[in-house]
Length: 78
Image (tube, rainbow, N blue to C red):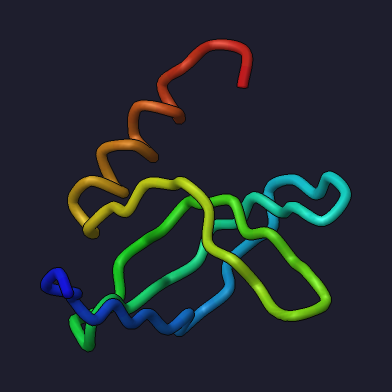
């Protein structure tokens, strides 16, 4: 059997649902991975009868989240 790494996560704070489409949502949450401190997490979540499945996304620390916020605030037309 291959080496399987344990992967745990906990959504510590739901901040906003950015989009809903059928059984999928795109959310900004604070998520703690493998017991580490929570980070900002933008990700698709798939909601099924048997549970919720994590999709692809991006995780940002506080400095990265501030840089993204500042870049978005500087864009014309937003």
